[in-house]
Length: 205
Ligand SMILES: N[C@@H](CCC(=O)N[C@@H](CS)C(=O)NCC(=O)O)C(=O)O
Image 1: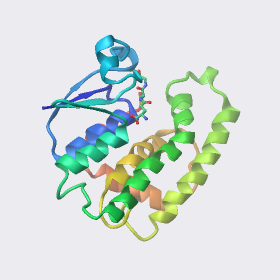
Image 2 (image 1 turned 60 degrees about the vertical axis):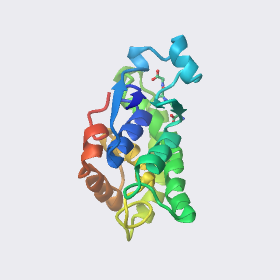
Image 3 (image 1 turned 60 degrees about the horizontal axis):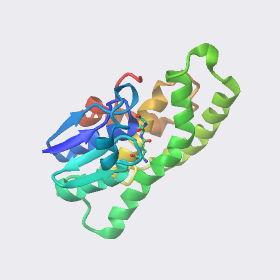
């Protein structure tokens, strides 16, 4: 049985839970991080010296770094679903997953600003700068989705898992999002996936 450590409102934990469900891997999840603490306990630090979530145990194997865990789930449990045999084609999908952290650049501060900061403590100028930067970066996704349903082509891939967590958050912020119709349609497509609906498309906390 796989054990996934991490609170469900963490984007990096959500990626791992989403990937596990996409490949049909069975797991138990243990709350850790944020208000749950746990991550600074010696037993946890022995698994993950970063004191961050997620951490995954699969038998004797202990992993951290969400994208590495998604890759591992794809490789070990995702034959016929997330795993792509051809190394070049696989790298193209993984490229988009890792690029998700570029999206995280402006989306992280927007999330903290609008979700975890009371209105009177927000920095409107900084939030506006992040909004403008985010729209610029989302433009790359918008163009990539011009003629294809998923970020790496016609098939759902780990690339979509890297981006999908930010797609949901972006559509919840109380901001002007500009005109990104391909992105909006992509969000609807992702929401139709049960694992995304279960782990990602949730109220922001
Ligand atoms: N690069 C790491 C980042 C992990 C990370 O920053 N996790 C955050 C939550 S998204 C965390 O553990 N924050 C502290 C906490 O929850 O206690 C990954 O992708 O797994």
